[in-house]
Image (cartoon, rainbow, N blue to C red; front, side):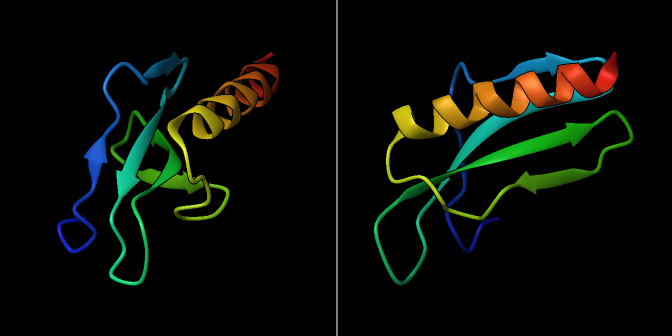
Length: 77
């Protein structure tokens, strides 16, 4: 995460029954800073939801974050 200068997008954490969803921004060596949706589990595992650095703006990433939350909550039911 240090290589990409990963930063947690403040205010982006959405709690789930078994962890949380959140946004990060990364600065790849080959282009501009971009955003990723992440899922953290209670056991400490963190996964990227979708593709790494797939959102050019925070606004686009926040839309994807809400969509991921809807899917995750539906899966919990």
